Length: 313
Ligand code: FDP
Image (cartoon, rainbow, N blue to C red; front, side):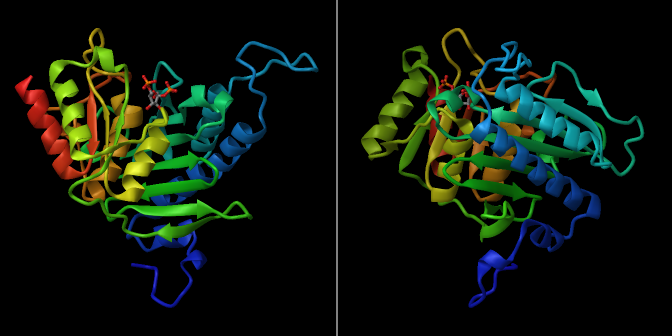
C-alpha cells in the first residue's frame, strides 16, 4: 500500500502507483499512455462541437462525432505506444493489427466513449479499457492483465486494477492523475440498484428480482451511462447494476469485450461479483468481437440473489 497515514495521498501520481504494483515497465507505459489519451478525450467532450459525423463546421471542415473522435485519439496513442500488437474498439468492425510480432506486447479492447448519447444532455460518460498479454483478444475476461475506466463527470477520475486491488485517481488542475482511493472494497450486500433496459421487456425472474430489491429498500440510482453507474456501485461499495436479457434481446445490450469484461474484472478485484445469470462474466469465452451478454454486477449477495431469481424463471 502506497498511501501512508499522516502523508497526503495526493502526492502519489498514477505512474508512481503503477511502479509499486510489480508489473512490467511496458504495462506501466501502456496504462500511462491511455491516461494521457484520456486528457484529449475529455477536452473533446468538454469543448467539441456536438455535431454528428458527416456534418461540417463554420469553415466547411467535416465534423467528427465525439465517439469517432475519441476512438481516433485512443487508437493513435495505442499504435504509437510501442507496446501494443492488437487493438479492438467498439467503434471498429475488425481487429487493428499494429504488429505481427506480439512477443512481450499487449492487446487492448476499449470503448472510447461509452454513453456518448448522453453528452448532448450533459450527463457523465467514460472510456473503458481491457488489456491482455499477447495477441489474443478473444479470451476469457479472467485472463485480462489489467482493466480500467476513465469517468468524465464533474471531475475526471481513473480507476484501474492490474489484479492487485482497485485504485482510484482523480485529475487535478494540472491534468495529472493523483491517488484518491487505494484498495477500494465492495460490501457483501447493497442498498442501491441500477437497472438498464425497458422494464416491460424484462422476463418474470428479473421482474421479481426488481420487486425483491424494492421491498428490501434499495434506492433506484440509474444515470443511463455504464461508467458512472458502475463507478457509483464501486465507490459506494454497495449496490448492483443489471442489464438483463430483454424480450427480443436475449443477450441484453452491453458488449462482453468492451464493457462487461473490464468492469467485471474491476468489481471482482474489489470483492464483488458479476454474472450473466448463470456463469461469471469473466469465465465467458468470447466468440466474436461484438458478443453481448446480460449482466448482474455488484455486491456478492445481491448478485447471488439475482442468479436465484433468474434460475427460477
Ligand atoms: P449508450 O447507449 O448511451 O451508449 O453501452 C451503451 C449504453 O449507453 C451504456 O452506457 C448504458 O449503461 C446503456 O447503454 C443504457 O442503455 P438503456 O438506455 O437501454 O438503459
